[in-house]
Image 1 (cartoon, rainbow, N blue to C red):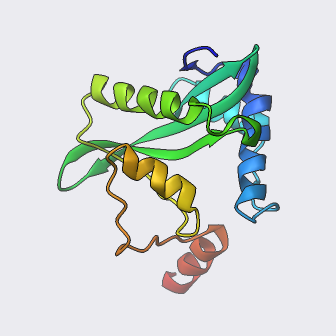
Image 2 (cartoon, one colour):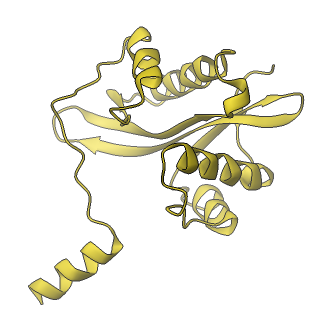
Length: 159
């Protein structure tokens, strides 16, 4: 097992496979709309929208962590961990810890005040993992989103 590294454009097909595997695990198999081309454009252009770390086992990418910058009005610069994914075959072998370590080291190196992410309330193994690492799972907060259709409807209602 190698140490995590920054992903390259060549990793994006496998990154997309892992994203789809997570969607399947989270019972949302049809939710992934992003393409390899989207990942390459958004992660490797002049102003990348995200940073992705991958970890390999036997020269195959078997895990990833994808983060992007945010700004807290209370704390200042923060990063959001969108996904930490480990191929199901390799869960429990330390890859998740290595990826989370890399995210925390990265956040520290760029001076963020907080790293935040969401976890599904039924994913007890992930919750236990994060709590063992010292994360505060804030069960009294709800995630709020406007999807693409909701954005369009909102815009229609204010015009």
